[in-house]
Length: 594
Image (cartoon, rainbow, N blue to C red; front, top):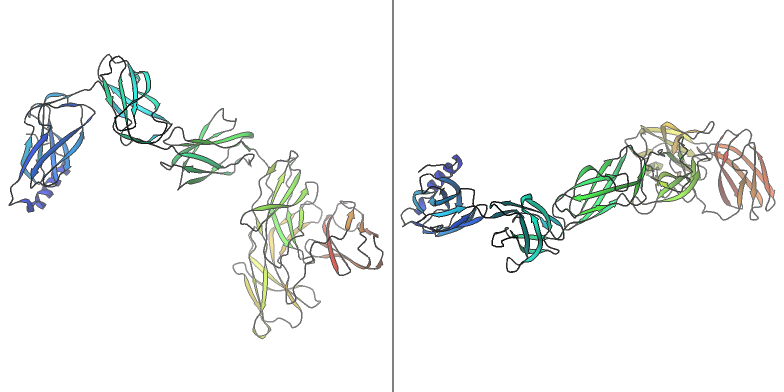
């Protein structure tokens, strides 16, 4: 006998022998039941080996001889119970008419048995390799069918499927080219748990092969959630691709891109689904097309794919927020950005975050020809911080993506012991800065800086606060400044809201009529008052840093009057007109362009 056991099998046998002492002292026996002579095994099929015994160990060695016992080849080791067992083994291409099988207790090599008579091993007419019991077969999906022809003369095959473990068969296909060795077939329109594929010689149905029993499962269903229809993405930038999946079989998929409405596709990434959804960031190519598509394909199910709606990839200018500050006179937020040099932009869109996280709505539209400044008249910075973004649309009313957000500083104060004042604020988000400037105003005195602290901290206590009316602001400096493109109109200072012992009031949006013309103004402008504005009127003009440029009192103003104003000395820029009449405060933005 030739011992062909691998080294690890020898080691296993020794270990089992040492652990098998408990079986000594009792009668042991082993009898090979099958194959025991006369069986006809077919290559590439699974055949049963069975045995019985008494006092057996838990591991059996199987050896095969194709030549009547002259030489032996190891079939490996299999588990056993003390009274026997059975196992299905794959029949390799050991052709023989004089084959024997031997079974040996690995813990007691003296205990063995072999076939009483020879059996045969021969090639079947044909054999099916796929689908198998481990194959992924999906309902209503093309599935790879792979076979080998052993018998000469078989040129055409017919295919049938059983979904009830071989009780009945239904025709699938006819006259398949047998010499191809493989094809794709839809094996079942619906899921089934016990399926068998049958292939047979179209000229002689007695020449056939059966597959292993396999399952047909529901195919994965993909839905692309991003990009969406009409979305515009910049070239050489990151685009989020996201999807949902039902009936997931495995997490792997591959993603394709088309820039010509699906005529040509290129694989751009391999995706992984986590749970029932997935996402990845793809760096867009340097193309310009409004016929772009994304397609996601399941790695296993050929029918499981999804195609996005048409979207656009094209180069366009970025419109980042430069800064958002609070006008110290009106206590309302002012959004400032820098105007890119572009023929594409028709109007800038100013967005503000709603009461829902990361949900933004347009609050203002500013023409490309106007100054890149907007006031949020519905804001009240004394209550909370705000977030803003900038986008734009072109002359075709296409809306382009929003910028990253900027968040304002929200300052609150409370009085501590001994007249001290504690300041707490939210950080400004949008650009880097190194320190906060603590500003204080006492009574009618001007604002003054009383301290500077690291941007690492967002609190401060004023131990030297004077008595009486007192107010505070927090200021940061944009290190790069904001160039609005107008003469002498570079902004650097960002202010929080004013926080005072007596809260700064902000009037509700007024319905009182107040207008300015011409727009933009140059050396002169006219202020037109409505019928509601009369009597003593105060007019103040500030720039967007809160600096007062002009202030006048007009007693005895008649209703509906028009007030001319010389603006020839005003530098180009954006200003706020503040009018107080009959206890009501009105604010309007205007532009000077000389």
